[in-house]
Length: 409
Image 1: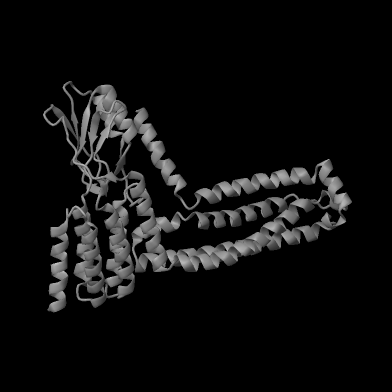
Image 2: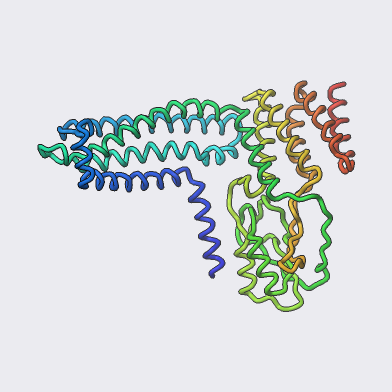
């Protein structure tokens, strides 16, 4: 029960922090607290003395104060609407011309969220101030300091808007999107990947229990730390039968638990709770999604509706760069506990599978395009040269032969 609750909390926590509204909501709350603090300062003895000593900080007319705040609130609302209408247009363009899968990285862009948060925070700040203006003859009770700070926020919002226009036009470029996907994939690989090794699984002769999936969805990840703790405490050995990113139907075999003793139902439930199933293609969880997204971008660019071989070539170059890194590295397949005892075996897609899944469709779509033929031939030849151990020479030679035969014919 506790494990399921932790899993549920983790899932909704991840959804919350990846939402486009997460940072804006916190920033709006921060601006609301700031407005309260500034009002306390404005109406404090120190604030009154400051405004008395500096006459330019005083506002005598409540109507003027209301006009300033109302004008600013309306202007910033207009900036917000215009700015994020542009974002929606950019997202629609990216989805139609590249791939729906790249939208998550664009929606989760921190700069866009911070700009949205600053705009909304300024609006909240202005509206809260507007409710505090008092119709009295003495300007000392008008929150002049707070209003001048609001004017400063407005100036910052204008400069943010100018920079935001430039930023949005740059982020919609194919080169920028492709580079972002490539960098995210590289980051995940450098964090998780290790040198290639051949795992030795010592527990295959033990009795085992098979656990099946309880829902149809994508198998995304598992809590390695928690699963190792369970395996060590119960003296279990676990073989996961499917790689991450696989769509599994309900009732498919997923886990084999090896043990010389009977495995309780409670233990099985705890093991199930460490596995995560949900939709999406988060590159930070699974680097393979980065390969597939680049392949999709290239294929979409080669489609008759888009017909942009130049973009396909850029995506292909990024894809081959990732594959070159993967020649001698892969995700670990065997995990050990604190005592260095192997406990979990986890299958991963090998280089050849990824290569054929990603390069094969691009070649099928673009094999009649001379730029694709030329670029793919040069890149695969470089991959072959980089394969010092000649582990995949046969694979590379097969594709090189296909390209050369197509060019001759």
